[in-house]
Length: 418
Image (cartoon, rainbow, N blue to C red):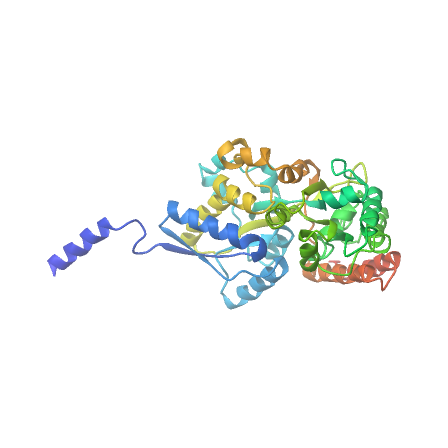
């Protein structure tokens, strides 16, 4: 018996750390089309550094709305993941429901955290009610992708893309006029229900609600101008009533002149277009002196209350948002990293940005970003669905833009906290 026990002790000493009982951390993420490849690569890289922590990736949810609904249900059945990646505008609902766990203490007590180079802006987008609940995994901005060949054929200058909507719509109309199966433009108004709507309102100097968060403000002059941009794309440039999933293949196939969407798609566009034509990225038009654009992207959040799992999960969160994880994610997508260290290191993102003007365009918009607004109260998700449904009426031409804005306002107002 003693001999067997001694043998087990010797065997344990010879095995690598974590061979017997690695701490398991369950992680869930959304949007597999964007995140699957970089998240899996990050987990593999983390495993080499921390074999004592086993990351179990749960089945990804289709988008930011589905993962928040999934986690809300999981909180009732006690089946929450330990860590989850959520859209920045969905953090608030998880905090309000007591599901997300604050990480202020973990940051404060971690002497190595400051060495990750995570910026104040990246931290600020993960703050709710004055406390830290998330850290940006990656940030995006709305941009316009355009086919330089089609722009040139339509009489435009690919090196001087229009900087205002009048110019963009006029160019889209000329591209549409090329004939054949070529289309002019698509605006991805459906993203998470209202992100691109926020981009139109904020870039015209407006806001979603007033300072009290009890009254709709997107029906003011900025919202009126913003919804007219969408309407003009439909009526003047003949924008089709379709989805990004359908429009993207047209752009990649050289049949669509421009598409306004998240900078997160830069990696995909570059890869899938290849050398078929030059893909360029233009900044989102800012239409007012105080115009801003919403920060897109996602934040990683701690959901487990178990102390041991929190400790292990924190190590993964740091790796995911730190220099190594950020480098993997940025190269695969078009996101901007939470940390500023990789851009200073040629071996990480320094040379990458130098040779990638499309990625630089997204970076250069950061001084203009504002928070991706999260509607308050129990109806936050419902409000974005209402906005999306009303915007559909503009795109399918079933209602006039000015009437849609009035109806959208009257439908959202009763859903706000009183």
